[in-house]
Length: 352
Ligand code: 13P
Image 1 (cartoon, helix red, strand yellow):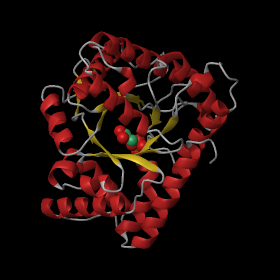
Image 2 (tube, protein in one colour):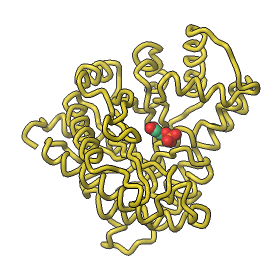
Image 3 (cartoon, helix red, strand yellow):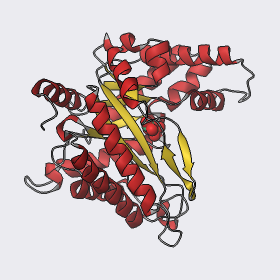
Image 4 (tube, protein in one colour):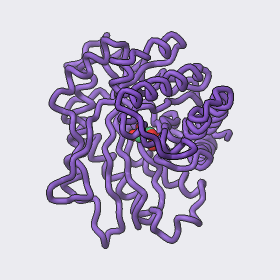
């Protein structure tokens, strides 16, 4: 594209491809905000109630990140998404990049409710995005991620609203273009919620809609798609829909492959799913069933044309490990990380 130099375009392309190759490798997402990490650590601890000062919380957060990163190798993990504090203040990037792991940074800020639709959210962080992405690049980051939460209910309850989809699509496209301007591969993350009463068809419909709308806006913003990735949720029935319990990983695999074939342009070099709070084994089973389905697609068929389908899991990768860490059992923590990263790797090859 006219405004991307050949040198920049080549680098963006090679970073995007490296994040999903060789087949099976994927991303560990550790970009939770401090409050969220604190909540997770408290939930994982034995007594569930701790009174730490802010300084103690910061120290504990840094130690958890250090322990987690020291457990990783690049056998199964291609990249790690860091919270800006971890990259710029704790300066833990080098401990990963020295192992051949590519650094990413969380780009989106916090959420603010839509005034007209209090169950939907505007994602903040566009105003100062360029300098923040430039600072992350200078600190070693080569990719970035922007999460856009999308409500999803039955049509009767009426979410998401059209205006929220338009805002999220436009915001993700602006993010992607600015991230590339700073030399970072953007990962757009449309995260369709599954806490409500939508059935699988409704979830498919909303996934397809927001993904298509986002790529349409990317086109107008001149985003170089070969130098991007997408991080979607798995389409699935909501927790309040009766079919939630009877829907199999194979059903979800078919729904997911259908969504991707219908909405992701073929120039996008990879898809890395979020786990969204699913049980780790479930997140791995869905990904494995999806890859198994695609692996057996006939050459030339729509599913056979899909790019590598891998993971960018947070909770599904670290949940077990964190429980051991808060109890001080470092060896068990490392074993849990090994098991989770290997499981995700196998799932991304359709072999879990
Ligand atoms: P989960 O896999 O825990 O959903 O985390 C991925 C992520 O980055 C969510 O924004």
